[in-house]
Image 1: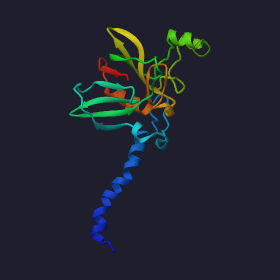
Image 2: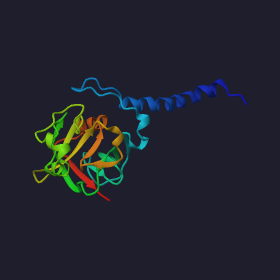
Image 3: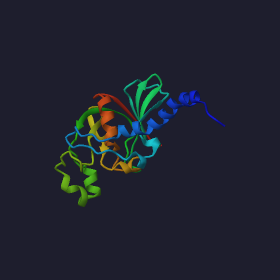
Image 4: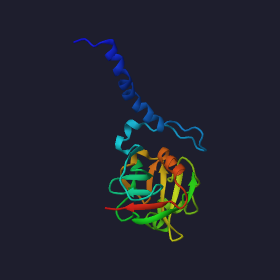
Length: 204
């Protein structure tokens, strides 16, 4: 069977569009040299496609700007409105350590200092006591490139939405209760979120 030149040309744009989808997605996770601590690209072939950042259909009564953390799903949704949301893969807290219910973003920080909570120090003093005075932001800081601090009634809940230098942990339940994201994703979310934004954390 022969294919006409016209038929080949008509099919070419669709073929090219399919070929371009993967490089475009890799570009979202490419090198970020203009950060205080430059980020290297994330090899997305090691990240499941469903855990990569993407805009999706999302039916919700929550207004645009709301953050919905679906812990069982290992997904975070930033509501865009008009039935759409930006979806991110996340890592969540181990059983018994996670926040549930409503909160709001009380403050935001770039390359934040990490200070272990009193509970973290009690659970693992050998690992955490030496950081009781705070660990400055940087590539080895467990809060990653950005952090959004969750508050209730004017009080810090000690839970954060934050980056991580362990992208392989996305999709797992292994943190001390906070919600971790790939650094590229937490930067994207940070730029969208305002102080005061509502956060809803859904548990199983």
